[in-house]
Image 1 (cartoon, rainbow, N blue to C red):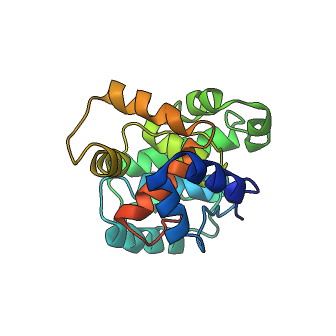
Image 2 (image 1 turned 45 degrees about the vertical axis):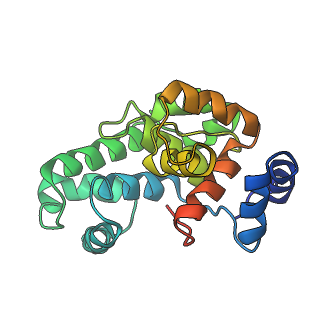
Length: 205
């Protein structure tokens, strides 16, 4: 599923920013995509924390194989002992069980997100152990397809902005935040194109 706003946002960004215009043209045949599975997306983000993409894929495969289905109920049924041989650290197992408990206990109800703004969703998600603001922002981008997320702590975004707009010189978080204002209300889209400038292969969470 690609956002309905994608082409409109790309046109708006390109009309106001020469560098962005070049990126939009270069990656015109690509776009942001969602898997459409909120629980699986969050579980995958926890599994992939602080390890390479290749390692995360391998652990995810073993983790998935240990479950009857990728659902909160299946994780709670397996319990911490049932997930111990999947290549997950004890801490990540605890995080995944806590995530499952939040879904199963009604502390996270995906249907409510439609009526919640970005910050409210972030607050709800970061109540789960192992989910910080960056992970929540990735979820807003890659699952909810929110159009105006600007993940200031993302290393790739920082690097791309500094390379394209500051001759490679690092800037403070405050300057980065102020600079990003030029791309409102399409900061998600600008971020996605900036990521592509570093790695042309899109990430799918």
